[in-house]
Image 1 (cartoon, rainbow, N blue to C red):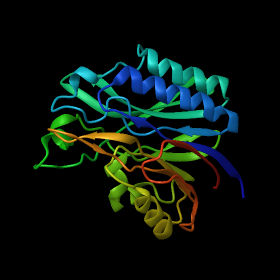
Image 2 (image 1 turned 60 degrees about the horizontal axis):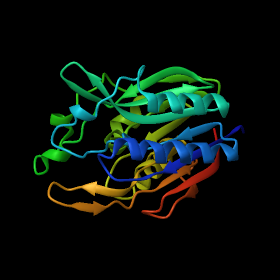
Image 3 (image 1 turned 45 degrees about the vertical axis):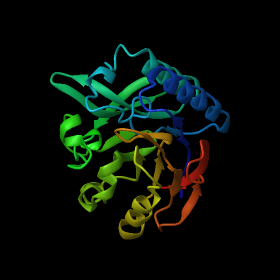
Image 4 (image 1 turned 30 degrees about the vertical axis):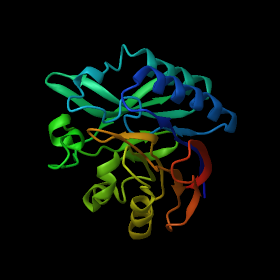
Length: 244
């Protein structure tokens, strides 16, 4: 059975400190290249986060972003595929996107289509904050066929069902408050689909205060066995070999 070497990064960030957070993520990605990964996975919109009631000032254009250009460079230097989350500026707002770079070339992106509803916390209500995507895509790559499921999409059985039998593995970037591993383990046990996930750590904007975020990163095989996983709330690079 072929294996993929995946480096999943749990990045510690302070929401809203975009430049500083990107610099941290870029440096961790550069360090991760020492493991010679096939795939390097970063969390959902880790640089901006959910830092305000209006995320439009934090949006970027993919083709002109100097930060995304750095991840494209890293994918070329590391001869690997890099999946990096960001907020994409679009007419009328921002989209929650994951850009995919392989060997220095842009190969596609996924935009979050299932948005987290939160009437009690408008600063976390994605129905207000984000412009939705068009659904879950299947990407062809030199490593096989895969899907990207962003945060809340991993919590919905329908998202996994939409790609089951069509992909060899899934990549799951998160920006959730807590350890999201159970979503990927549950899907693997139910559908036999291996995956890797990466959540951010650091702080979470809570309207009038900042809370710690005990996120994790890791890999789970198609039987639901966790191959590697970080401790909650710890910034680290988790490297594992994922059978596909």
